[in-house]
Amino acid sequence: MEEVNSKNNNKETEKVMTFWDHLDELRWHIMRSLIAIVILAIVAFVNREIIFDYIILAPSTSDFFTNRMLCELGRILSLDALCIKEMHLKIINIKMSGQFLTHMYISIVAGFILAFPYVLWEIWRFVKPAMKDTEKKYSSGGVFISSVLFMMGILFSYFLIVPLTVNFLGTYHVSESVFNQISLSSYISTVVSVTFAVGIVFELPILVYFLTKIGILTPEFMKRNRKYMYVIMLIVSAIITPPDMFSQILVVFPLIVLYEFSIGVSNRINKKNLEDLT
Image (cartoon, rainbow, N blue to C red; front, top):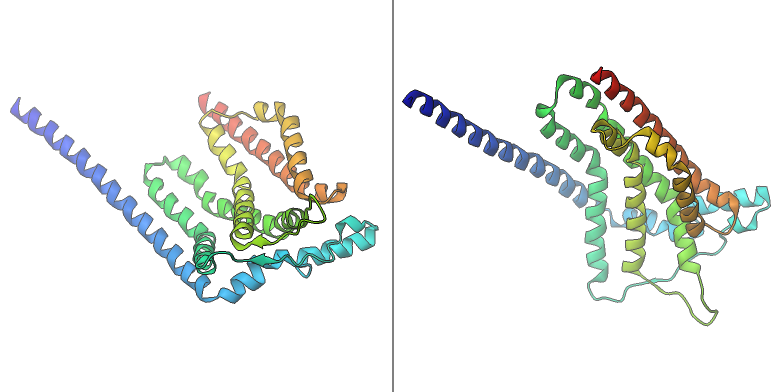
């Protein structure tokens, strides 16, 4: 009897130790991720001119690559609405520490974006021991695919949605007697929120994969609600683009492709789940 109790106590101690071991391992994964973000944030901080003049503030000028390409495309297609000829927004700072804090904030954001693939890899390394062999096999490329999708979303947003949004909101007038002087913090928050939001949206296939895997989402549900999603995408694209159909198509088409691709992912995983049950 004493031997049985002793074995049970040893098992309980082993479980507690295993739990604390996992916590310690998680701490080191988090620490390594934070170190990577901080190092890349420092790199972004010391390259202030590149980060702000050539990246962050670039979409607010008519010389930005997308604005010039849209203007050229508008000339070819005889669509004047596409051409953004003068969009030099007057961005001002109204706080004593505003520019410094903005510099710090953008550096951290840049560090996180650049370190995103590594952070995902650290997360995958932590959950990998708990996976089955088949799960490890199917998730081995998940980090790469998630990173690619996120970066595609960031680039798509930065080169298309951000300049269109900045142009619309920055030049919108309720009256000719009201002038726009955009605060630095307002401009930065708009650019960062739009960019990150689209980056997260591009992770939709990964989210669909896991929700279908655990049985919460089905391809039938996504197909049944396809028309509602299309309407939402069209409304969003109509809000942030100039008042012409071509600009709306430029924004909404990649989102529709992404949604249809997610349906394909869900359909494939759903078939795999049914095969495993049989």
